[in-house]
Amino acid sequence: MRLFFAIWPDETARNRLNELAKRLHGACGGKVTRSDSIHLTLVFLGEVEKTESLLEAASVISANAFEIRVDRATYWKHNRIAWAGTSAIPEELAKLVDALKRALEQRGFSFDERNYVPHVTLVRKAGMAENLPEFEPFSWRVSEFCLAASSESGYRILEKWPLTGC
Ligand code: 2AM
Image (cartoon, rainbow, N blue to C red; front, side, top):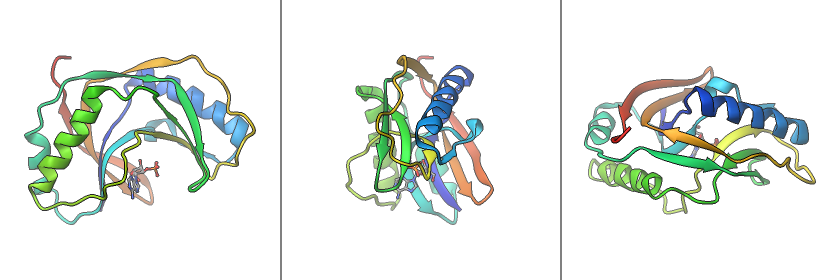
């Protein structure tokens, strides 16, 4: 199974991200992400046989709920995706990612040291547009994170954990 920790938007944020996805698709063409597949990856693990130690690692995490201000849309040429993100990464998001990585490293997982760029892929196989559409920034309230599996048929959420203070 290809596994990853992620956050999935609640209905309000999903609707906003889905609207933005359609607008980006209008500008770039390509393949728009299905609204129920829209997510932000926290830690990508790749092929993992057994989930026990992942579940254990996630269960020791204590992190606060937070809000992401979605205020930027970007195109990445190297993998031809158009994505939504934020110009101000919330401290709690960075802490959640660090805590997850630490808990996973203690259980034998390792990660590349590339800089973490939180992004929500909204269009794949996108063409480069002259200008991406402007949009009104919006707030995404994050109160849980999850372990998800990726396969040919799409994504499946395996388990969810609440963030505190929500
Ligand atoms: P993407 O949307 O930019 O492709 C499931 O594939 C999730 O894991 C997606 O959010 C995907 O990001 C991310 N992902 C896939 N391969 C990855 C990698 N090598 N490093 C980090 N994230 C990855």
